[in-house]
Length: 170
Length: 86
Picture (cartoon, rainbow over the protein chains, first blue to last red):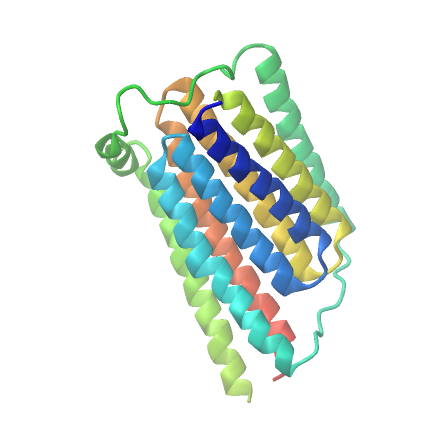
């Protein structure tokens, strides 16, 4: 067993353990920390997949999106009790579950038919071509990349507006 | 190490996230479950891209990560707004 396999095995175990902890724990702070652990484990896995750009993006998301929420919850829950009530949306959750199961079944069928190569070594033979990824993002995938950035900008503006609105209510 | 291990791990993470999104009743719990499902889909994208020897999988993973970050920011802002006293 090589060092790569050991590292990927540990990162995979951390991901599964963190996911189970995040789902099973009722304390949102523990769930947030476990989710951040899952994201950092995924970053290691992406590095093992020879995808350092994706790994860096995951680390940025974990550091600037998930961990601040955990810190925020740690401060908030010490000053106020939770007023979150159970949302009663079984239909939406059911539809999401059916869609996810359908996509998973399609992937399983594609793998069974041999459409998705699963026995390919992840070790890159010719290094990481960051310039090609940049060309792809700026060329054929420019619409998708631009659209996702617009969505992210809108989310930041919305979050800031919600925060400003909360301050104005005080 | 082959892509099969990554695809299997993505399936396990997606299943755990789906179960969490269904069984948890709090907004934070469901948000964490959805985050796990998106992370699993992203891992599947990247592993499939490596399997096909194409960069499209990594490109799709990057787009999914950015959208997941936007979803997390809005979701956490809403949850924090509900939790905080006015």
